[in-house]
Length: 422
Image 1 (cartoon, one colour):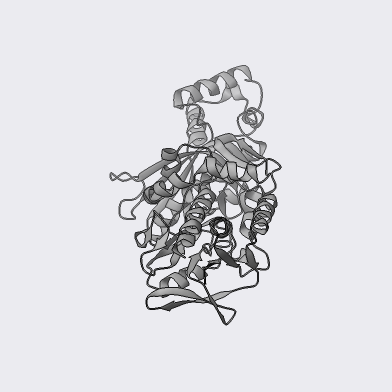
Image 2 (image 1 turned 90 degrees about the horizontal axis):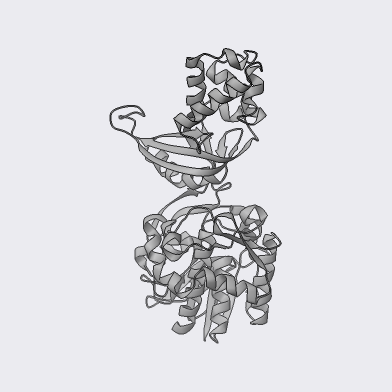
């Protein structure tokens, strides 16, 4: 039977299924949920950041040390190809700040609708409410699956079940169990692109405040070294948008740093985030700005002058943290007080004590070891006839459209390869 079975109807699974059909093979998509593409429909805060227009080298750099695995994959199907694909299907796209590509109408469900319409035109068989419980293997080769208690046969199988993040969308980690059952190694999974929990009540006092264009320094050190000892902590700088939550910090700049934070905390390292409210100004320029403001507004009370430097919700926190009196005229601020304010504006510390779980995570870090997958075909090196694509693999990147592009690209290659195997 010249049939390919695709387990999972997400980005990787739907792209894979379409490619199988285009290659002339029969394809069946087994989706455990009632509707496919549920995670796509909520991605990007409901807008779906499809990809990024960065060049190949920069794109791969956002995946860290595992990014080199994708070089061959992206040579076959990359961002320009994905953009062309959706435009040919009638979905208008727009490129925004940072090279992020979205549907022009900003509606993620339009992406799902476009993919489903494409698959319907290719006569792809989509079976919802189809939970795969087991891979069927004979003589070391996959020959099908057990779905809803019944065998379903095919000459090749594509595992595109997603990760463990947003389990309500169907990504509950099933793929790891299935891959492991045929000999694959699973790199430890953990939440990725996730908000973090901070010590104290400062974040709670600022809950709901959204800051743009701020700098954040990530400091990681071993407990024996301490943050301020001679052995200096590992540092990473980031810039972007930040959101204060009741329990800690979120927003794009925090999510970008979160994968390193999660790994550091899991390794029992100390983690600190330092917020810079004025990253465009160095210490000297910021001091000059403060002196000018205090001089020109010397009769105004400090609470009024500070309102020109930061959002209103931050003013009282600033006064509390720096010990400045809200009613003191700006012209009466002493040099030592000005320096204390200047330092605080560029060095607001947050000790990170934890992170949110898979329910809040955008992606899953970890997954099927890339050493056991052929990057030229996405074929399993452990079980002939099995192909893997998408978030089930040990591939994770920053926010910005990189992860979804990897899902589509690996799905594209897995689909074509699985069809040829048949």
